[in-house]
Image 1 (cartoon, rainbow, N blue to C red):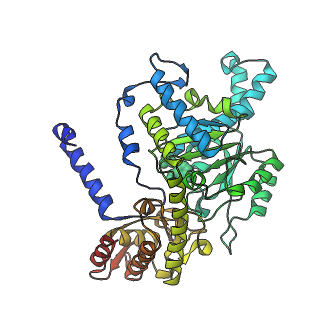
Image 2: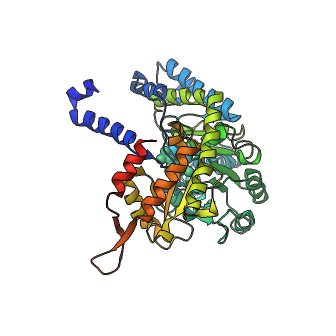
Image 3: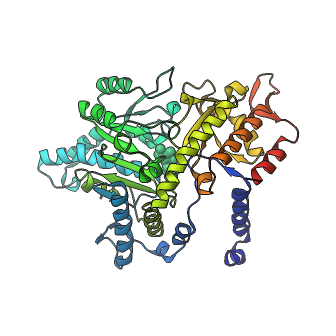
Amino acid sequence: LSVIETIEPRIAVATRAELADQRASLKLIASENYASPAVLLTMGTWFSDKYAEGTVGHRFYAGCQNVDTVEALAAEHARELFGAEYAYAQPHSGIDANLVAFWSILAHRVEQPELAELGKKNVNELTEEQWETLRHKFGNQRALGMSLDAGGHLTHGFRPNISGKMFHQRSYGTDPTSQLLDYDQVAAAAREFKPLILIAGYSAYPRRIDFARMREIADEVGATLMVDMAHFAGLVAGKVFTGNEDPVPHAHIVTTTTHKSLRGPRGGLVLATEEYAPSVDRGCPLVLGGPLSHVMAAKAVALAEARTPSFQTYAQAVAENAQTLAEGLKKRGAKLVTDGTDNHLVLIDVSNFGLTGRQAESALLDSGIVTNRNAVPNDPNGAWYTSGVRIGTPALTSRGFGAAEFDTVADLIVNVLKGTSPVTASTGKPGKAKYMIADGLPEATKAASAEL
Ligand code: PLP
C-alpha cells in the first residue's frame, strides 16, 4: 500500500478503510467470504498484463505458454474437485459464466443442427438470408428458471437482465405453504412451456435441491439442464452435497462463481459434459474476450485449496453453523422462510418485527452486522424494500466461528430487530426505509461482536 500511496493516496486510504470495516463488522452476506492470502496474492501478479484470447494451446496471441499452464491447471483442479468431464476457467464472473452457458447451449442445440442441415461448417459460410433465419431462431428459444422472489437469480431469465431479453422466460415458484420447491409444479410448468433450457439454482433459497429429479423433468421435455451452483459450490466441493444434491452428475452444464462459498477469487467457472464441451470451449469469442489470466491463476490456487481435507471440514462447518443460526433465530422469535435451512443461508422474514427488509438491513448495519435485504416469496414490499434479510455462514465460518459464536450472532440479530421500529414518513404513509433503533443498542451490539 505504501507504493499505491505515492500514486493515488485515496485508493490506499479506501483500501485500509475496507480492511478495517471488514475486521470491525460481522460479515453475514451469504455470497461473501474471505479468500486466503495465497489466493489474494496470486491475483496481484504480472499475469494481469498478458493477453491470451483463445483456449489452451490455441491462442490468438503469441507467448501464451505460461497462461496455458495456468488455465490448464485451473481446469484440471475443477474437473478433479467436482468430478466433471470438462471445465472452463475463463469466465470473469458468475454472470459471464451463465452467458457462456446460455450461448453454448444455443450453439449446440440451435446453431449446430442448422449448420448440419445446410451442410455448412460455420456461421461465416451462411448467406445473409440463412444467417437472418438462424438469428431469429436464437431469439425464439425458451428458458424456465426459479422465480426471483422464490430465490432465483436475475441471470435466470429476468427482464432487467440480458437473459430475459434473450429468451422467452417463465418461472417456477415454491409451495405457498411450505415455501419449498414443488417438483410437480416444476414438471407441470416444463410440460406446458417446453423450454430449451431448464435452469436450477438460486441466490436466496435456503434449501437443497434434488438434481436427479430436475434432470428427469428436463429429459421428459427435451430440455438441457443447466445448474447455477454459484451459491453452494463450496458445499458441493466440500462433499456436503452428494448424491442427488450434487448437480454435477445430473446436469448437462453447471455454472458457478468462484468467490462465494468456494472461497476463491472473484470469477466464474463452467463445468460441462463431453457433449457440451466443444461449445463451452468457444466461450471466447462466443461471449468473452481476453481471459483474466491472473484470476485464472488464483482460481487454480483456490481450487487446489478446496481439494484438501480441511476444506471439507470447513464446508461441513458452514452447513452446521447455518443450522445453529437458524435454530438460534427461531427460538428467539424470528420467522424464517421455509422454517429453516439445510444449506449455507437463512432468509429471515422480518415483517413480524414490523420492519421492511430495508429497515432491518440498515439497523443491522448500524450495529456492525452486514447483511442484505432480500425479497421473500410473494413479497408485498417488492424487490427494493423487501420483507426479508438474507444471512449466510461462509465468511464467519472462515473466521473460525462455531456453534457458540453463531448462537450469539443469532441473539445479537434478534435484539437489533426487536429494538428497531419503523418511522412514519413525512407523507403520512408508513416509511419503508426509515427506522429508529433503541438508544445505545448499536454500540452495545458492536461491543458484543468484538468479543467473538
Ligand atoms: N448466479 C447466482 C446464483 C448468483 O447468486 C450470482 C451473484 O450473486 C451470480 C450468478 C452472478 O455472479 P457475479 O456477481 O460474479 O456476476
